[in-house]
Length: 365
Image (cartoon, rainbow, N blue to C red; front, top):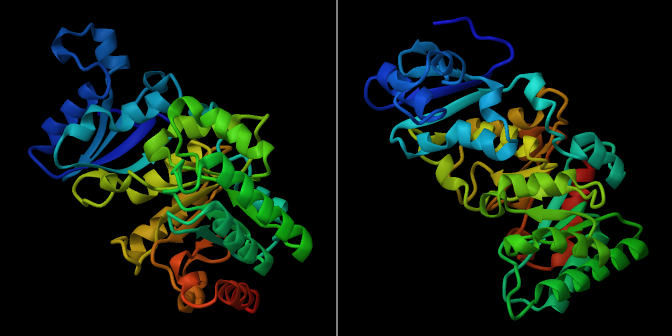
């Protein structure tokens, strides 16, 4: 085994099935040449095939030449979790990328400091919610959004399931909600960002993003598990668009919920989201209606904000069954650089009153 070179991509795997040495060899070949190792020329065996750097029980580190991941975000994902995603009992537990490789990615356009400047929010958590439920008319969604914006929320997003349904067509909904939010901002002297959901057909996503901006939306909600991580990256990198992006975890859960299979929570919702340009990464908070633990949530927060070459830190955004009485607990747990996402709980009673109460409670901390 060789010393780990500084300019190589390093992936830690936990192998929960079979002989870790044999499985590690299978992974390093499968994730690169997908060809009988003994039939490959010697230079390919040494320079192209992944190298097993260490084996410690069931924990294995394999390094890959950055050249293997040439091709940007799509090939990086393919190298990390391509065919090996079909192996039972294998989980990515950590990922380290050399700065020389990270330099090819722009990452979040705004990140933590950029969003604070945009929102004129120099301190404290960001306060976020979604307009819902599906089936509500565009006008009623707009009225909800106006009440929330006037209360002082920072971010009002579409619920992730809002697409182009017959009761609230996409273009009409975006225009109506954007108009309501922007008018409320002007009257109340607030600065809420409205984020329409871009879960539209693939051939429309870029046009839809620009159309949303042209009719008043000031940020975007993207579902990279559905639309693709690289589709999100292209939106984040588009200088003619230049809008903040919030990433929703829809379709990604099966990558993390099995502790013996998949991808580490922090790598998926932290590292990979940042590389793909998400300014804010939504994930299920501990103690809600999903199964994430405090340790897993802390791991996501760490990977959202840990050094990653020149890529800016992003906002962790815990949600999923959040309630108003947990605000102090959550700010104690996550600190100030967190985008707290509370949805349905705001609607238990008067929406405007609950929204103001949340803003006031966080302002008093």
